[in-house]
Structure formats: structure tokens, C-alpha cells
Length: 386
Image (cartoon, rainbow, N blue to C red; front, side):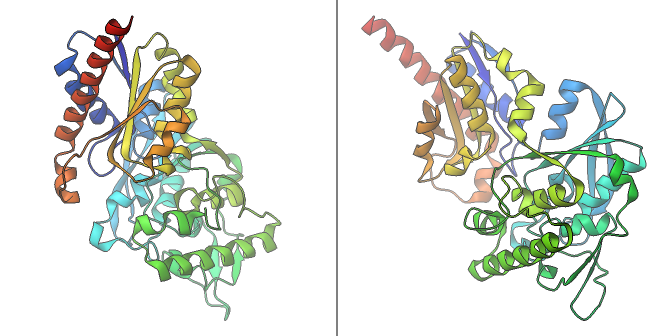
């Protein structure tokens, strides 16, 4: 029996490689003689740099940058062996995992550190930047990143906003000055790997859809939405580019919109790119089953997340696929309409989130074992009904 294990990271607990190992370890308890193929996945969030380096070769560079709340954090980017391509994760500089749960505030959080990562890459003379848009703590529409790259923003009374800014500045900005943007940006090709396909604004946009997951309450969600609408109306007035309804511009709290409107980035499906570089389509051939997963399986899993990408590959190859979620949302069953054959929850009894995260490896091992026992049962049932 050939089993392919291809999960995303389980955010704030296990990266995709460790998640793959845990699932495989559990499955081997019931199916010790199966042939296991581990393919750690990513969709633009955590693990994207690792996936590229594992496939293309390269190394990681660490640098200090501005954290989401304005302190310092050690971030990183990948340098591929072609010498011209860098891979950046916004999660490394502006990620939700960098902010303690009690301090999460997408109104304050800034993407300034991501801009500093991009500057550092250009300092090395790189001409192609692949930037993963997943796992952000921010909802600033990318203004922090743009500020770090040289853009200047002024209030209605002409005051320069000269501190690292976040979403709390979006409604104050009245004038955009792009004359100071780093001229090297014109010679860099940007490819943005998006973990969702949402637009900038509206009920399916960055603020309303994902603001609450980053700590925003109802009034803050409304504030964030109005701020992004204001800023991108100014953008349209300045450049003629209306980014608000473009799919994927809402990724990473609207940072996708800034990359699209100001840096001429191509907005790509992150998971499709990782599927290509990992060779998952070829690996999956001849498999008996594939197992994927992420921290929470819900309807949003169908909007560009890893499990849906893996399921599409499996459907094309006629391979059954099981998704393991750290938790299963009430709407998780909708994934059965999108080529998933079964779901399994990693956490099966009530407990606090910190405890669940601390026991993530054990939970995934146990979930893997349960999936394997279902496969054993399926074999027995097949023998009975043949």
C-alpha cells in the first residue's frame, strides 16, 4: 500500500515537515508495512521557503527586522541556487505567530518588516522575489511594506507619517508620494504566492473575512474595512489601478493588493506553485490514499489552502484523500463536495487551545493511527463484498 502524506503546517504548533512525520508515525502503528511518501506542503505561509529550498536548493539568510507591533524580530529569507531568486515569507517578518495571543491587534500591526526583508534581498542584487502571503498578523493593506520601501504618506493637513505605520493610519492618509520608492524595485520581478483567493474589500475581503482571526472585534473590522477602502481609492486616483475586486489582493491583510498595484506582482495560487515544485502530481501516481491537513478544516479550506490543492491533484489521479484538521469547523462537511473522501479531527476531547497546541505531535500521531485503522477496515470490507 502506497500512502502519500502531504499536509500544510499546523499553525503555532508544527511545521509541515513535523506534521508529516507525526501523521506517518501514527499510521505505522496500524500499517507498519505500507510505503510512505512524505511531501510537506505550503500555500504561501509558513514552510514556503523550506519547500523551495528542498526542491531547488539554496540557503537561508537571517536578519533583524521590525516586528508586527514595532519591536525587533529575527526574520529570514531563502536564496535559491540560481543566484537570482529569493523566497520571502511574510509570516517570517509580519506573522501572526510572532505576536502573543493576548497582544494581537490588526489595527496596530504593521507589514514594515516585510518591506525590510525585500530591501535586504535587493541589497544582495537579487532580481526575482517569490513572496509568500500567508499567516500574517497584519491588515494594513501593505502600507507598512510600502513605507519601508520608500513610499511616503501624508495626512490631510500635510503632516508626514514618519513612524512605521499599520492599519491605524489607513484612514489618516490623504496623499501618497511614491517618488521615494526604491528605484531597484523596477528591476525586480515579483511573484506573490497567495494562500487565499479573496479580494481586498467587501464581505469576502481581507478585513471582514480574516480580521477577526487576527484579533479584531466587530467595530475594528468596520474600521479596517473603511481604512482599506480609503487607501485604495487614493491608489486608484493616483495610478488608475482599481485593485479592490481583484482575486487574491486580499491575501495577507491586503498586502497582495499593494504588491499588485505598486510592484506589478503576479498573484499566484501558493499551493499550486508548491505542488509544481514538489512534484506532488508525479508522486501521487499509484498511491492507495493521500492524507493532507491543516490547523483547522472549514469552508475557507476551499479558497486556495493546501488541503484543497492536494484534493484536486488526487481527484485528477483518481486517488482517495483524507484531510486531518487540528479542529473541524461546523461547516467542514462542505469539503466533501470538493473531492475529499473523509475528515478526521486531531483533537477529540475538550481542552484549552494552549494545551491542544502543546500536544500537537501526539494528537496528529493518534489521528494518523485512526485513519490507518479505517484503511484496514476498508480492506476487510472490500474482501467481504468482493
